[in-house]
Image (cartoon, rainbow, N blue to C red; front, top):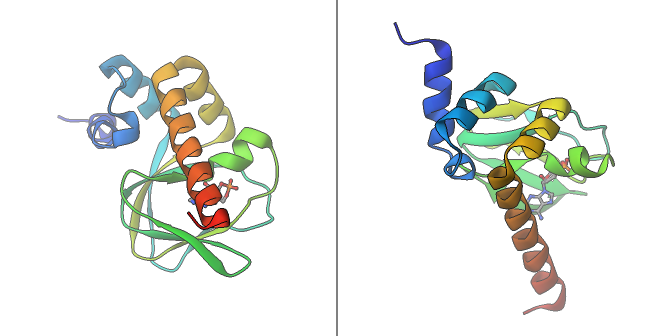
Length: 143
Ligand code: CMP
């Protein structure tokens, strides 16, 4: 019989963020994270609050808002909630489910452990952070 973990590993393997992980790393990651279904309209992350989790979207769409201004909509393969775990500051934005979601959830210790033990994952996360910073710079200056 195929276990819950097998399905989770398959799901994780389909997420581009995790695409370069080895089978062993995927198994390890599956043990560190939970998969959760979230109903449309639910607020997963609240601006200003203390952050405990980082989320990766497997299915569905979310809206990222700061002070009521929409910064981004994110879909499958994207992640959010990493900033508060990286710099231990309050949540920078509110993230709301625009549709029903299937998400991967990593707690703070698990997130740190994944970064420490999976250099490929850490590099990908830095690449996305770099892209977001460039996008913000371009938006700020207008080109
Ligand atoms: P965190 O600050 O923990 O909680 C809110 C999350 O929204 C944040 O982490 C990022 O993951 C995400 N976020 C904030 N600003 C942006 C942005 N400009 N584009 C995409 N996602 C963002």
